Structure formats: C-alpha cells, structure tokens
Amino acid sequence: MNTQPPLYPLMFKPVYKNYIWGGDRIARRYGRSLPPGIYAESWEITDRAEGINVVVNGSLAGKDIHELTQTYGTELLGRPLERFPLLIKLIDSKERLSVQVHPDEAAAKAVGGEAKAEMWYMLDADPGAEVFVGFQPGVNEVRFQEALAAGRVGDLLKQVSVHQGDVIYIPGGCVHTIGAGALILEVQQNSDTTYRVFDWNRVGSDGKPRELHIKQAIKVIQWQGIPAARQPMPSVHAEAPQKGNLIVERLRTPYFRFEELAVAGMLDCPLDTHSFHALFLEKGLVRIKSGSVLVDVTPGTTILMPDCLKKYEMANLDTTGASRLLRISLP
Image (cartoon, rainbow, N blue to C red; front, side, top):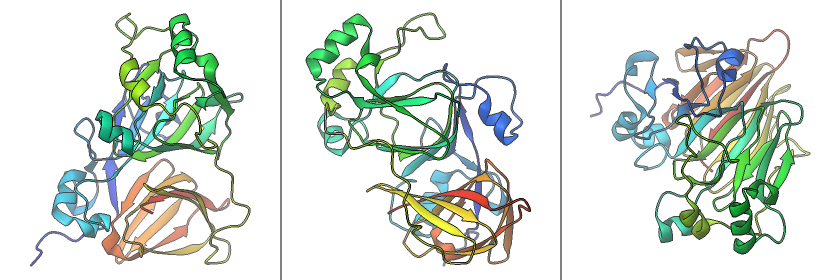
C-alpha cells in the first residue's frame, strides 16, 4: 500500500548559473527577487548532481526531483525512467556564448559522455539578435583546423537571425552557439556533455582562455547534412479543442514534444500520453485546477503536472487577452 502523499502540480526552486556571458534579464523580466549578479541560466526542472531542483509548494516541499522519481516512478513521469529525462532552462545571453557541440546517441556510445539534442524558443530577442547553427557548405575538418589556428571559427558558421517566438532545433553533432541579446527557453535531453570548440578569443573570469575540447569535438561533429535550424510555424493549428483556445505543436523530436498554447478562457488538458506536462507561462495569468488543488501561475513560472493526475484545467485570468504558455512533454 502506497502511504506517500499524493502528487499534485509541482513547483521548483530554480538553480542559477553565473557563466561569464550572462546578465540579469531573467530576474528583471519575471520579477524574481535575486541578489545582484550574473544569472546566465536558470535551471527550471532537471535531475543532475550539478543542479537538482527542489519542490517549493505543497506537502512535498523540500523533496528534490530525484527523490520524487525514485518514490513515484511512472506516477510522476508516465514511463519507467531512472531520472527526469530532460533539462528545462532559461538562458540570458548578454554576450555571445562559446561555440559548442554535443554528441548524438551514436557518438556518445563511441566516445563517451551523454547524448544531447536541444531546442531553443525565443522568449525575447533584441534587434539584430542571431544564433549560429551548423557550418557553411563545404566546411570540413581541414578548413576547421585552419580557422581554429587563425582564431576565425566564427566565420565558418551559419548565422540565423532570430525573433520572439522562433523555435530552433539543435540535434547532437551540430556545432552551434547563441549570439548576444536573446532570452531563451531551452529544452534538452538530460545531459551536460559539452565540447567547447571556440570562445571568440576571449578570456574567463580568471584572465585565462577557457578550456577547449577540440579532440573530443572532432569525433562528434557532423560536418554537413544538419537539417534546417528554424522550425516553421505550422499553418494549421494542431488543436483547437475549445473556442478561443489554441494549441500548436511547434516541434516533435524523439526526445521531447514542444507546444505553444493560447488560453483565452477555460481549457481542459488531458494527461493521456504516458507523460508528464511541464508548463512555462510566457505571458498573462492562469489558474490551474487539478482535483481540489488550485494554483495561480504568473509569467516566468514553470510547473510540472505529474502523469497520474490524468487531467487538469486552465483558466485565463488575464483581462487584456489570452495567456500564452509553453508545454513540454515526452513524445
């Protein structure tokens, strides 16, 4: 007999990272009370030793997501997994990030480390903001090594201008980075295997160049054949279950599904695909109801809906228009 407290909509304490390229946009935009400093990333939901999220609401407050996974298993995640399978984070790129690559599944097995595919949703982007995704046509290892020696790897990358609402997909093996001036919601496989290949000839906080991982990167880079980065906005809404509400599937990969929701009134949300739902409120104000539990959600809040809840309701409380949420689940 399970004597554990029943699951409910879960909220977590973010884990912040002070990488040198970050700023304070996350705190300013979402009204988070934080001491002055750099907040490059906010890890919203993940289960990693270097940043594990702890519940802050309800009877399970103080428990971390690893404990919940071990205790509740499929009730939480919908599938028999050893840990939460994704890392959901916010990124504030006050300056451009280093050029990186992550292994795909095959490379991770051959070289080691953890496979990592990821996607970026542009919460905000300054005029002229861009990302760099993949190499220009014709780039091979020889040209890469020559550019590396000359400190000009950036010249080999494909530049993609970005605007609010864009979705960018980065499969494993794709060299990439984020330019300055973007606020991003990132969804990725639960991995922190990163091979840095170029850092724009700058130095770290200690005054020394940051470590590069060229040997490892060479083994995992896909030189060509990377699919288009920007994901097109569907011309037809995937679902419109209730008048005034829209649900658009923006991306589906083998690792995660990403949807954009516009909630104008009441919206019934079934949990019927053997998966949790992770919700991020981008804009507006909503009230989530699950059984007898009511949670009011403000912009910049991430909330996890366990699979065992089976359904929940969302009500738009924004009197100026529809609320916009981003929803992540397993495919």
